[in-house]
Length: 212
Image (cartoon, rainbow, N blue to C red):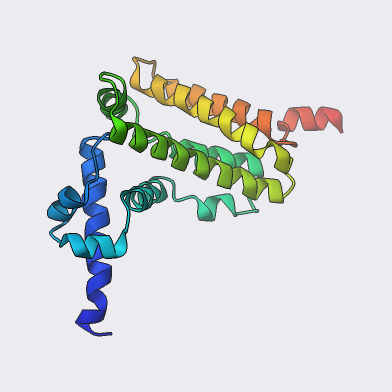
């Protein structure tokens, strides 16, 4: 493959990286063609070649961010691990970054972009796109498990909304002052939430023995 053949891929990657950085600095940032192209060091024509619309660029950027944060494909498809454990592992990935200062910074970014001031059209679109991408990841995990029979397919949308609410609450807990046991109690909460949506759960060894 010649250098010329590689050029479009390189410019596309530069655009994605630049847009990701802009959203990282300001979650409500307007991903305008001019601003992103300047940040990426590519022409506006090159950016338009890869992303004809601002919506297409935003969707790709958010998909990239979530794919990096929640690299879940291998986890959710590993049937050697019980469905409930796989789902908890995937849900925990969405609670990054860390506890305390990193989480407070993440929430501060969200607050400043979407709550402290009235969101403009671009901020609103960014938030709705972020929310939709997060919901899409949750729905994907649940759909995989539904295909295995772990929950009814008709329950996927409802359970997606429920788990999204649980995750928002746990993420906020990570930002607030907490005891050292927060991660242990967080795990307990995740299992309670997962057990509420899955059709069958793995009973503790003691309960299983008593039942047998």
